[in-house]
Image (cartoon, rainbow, N blue to C red):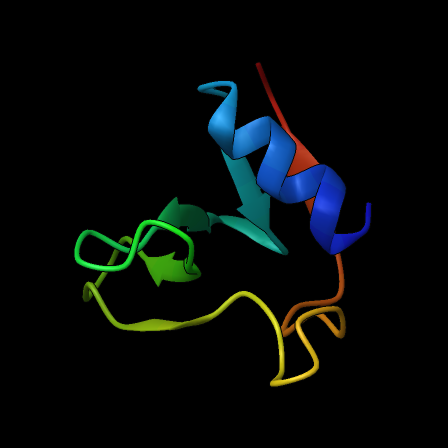
Length: 65
């Protein structure tokens, strides 16, 4: 999956995970155009991509919906 596919799935209301089900892709609450990878265990977040807006900060993304 690439960054645009992940964004489209999240926008469609699907749940997208990064590497494990402990990390989920969410939209930033204050900046809706920004997507984050959120750890469900401790609420720590990191950007979905690097500054180039395409290189992903995870290796394996999947959707269970």
